[in-house]
Figure (spheres, rainbow, N blue to C red):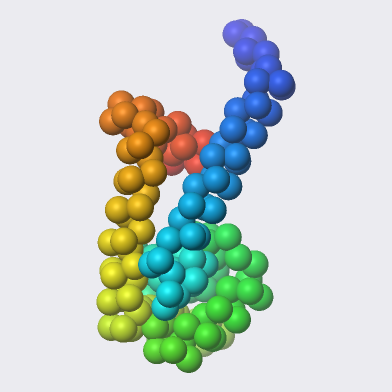
Amino acid sequence: MEQPARIDVRLANEAWEAVMSAHSKLMQVFAAEQMWSEISMREYDVLYTLSKHAEPMRICDVQEGVLLSQPALSRMVERLAGRDLVAREPDPDDGRAVLLRLTEAGAALQQQVGRAHAKSVARQLGSALGPDEMQDLRRLASKLGGRA
């Protein structure tokens, strides 16, 4: 039977620190951009998560795509619904559950902010990485996230 390779703890932690430092730096850059006047980055994250699904989503499924606790996400959904960006509707399969979907206004705002954010992401990554490096980054990040 083949022995598993020994994990270099120091290297693994240095790699993790590099990932987290890059994330922190990029998030600071993105947060300073002008596109966030109508919506916060966290609110956009919720709208973006909803936009990736054609069907309404349960709040627990939305939570898998965002970095918010369930109570914080529930409060945010309340605010987004109050601004007519998200609609809540009863789940026909579970009377206790609520399904969420983007409203027309929510979809329009997500697309508007999303275009500006996509350009910013491309600018930041493109200034630091070549196309092959971006392919490698996508492959490695997907592998770490369990999608490889």
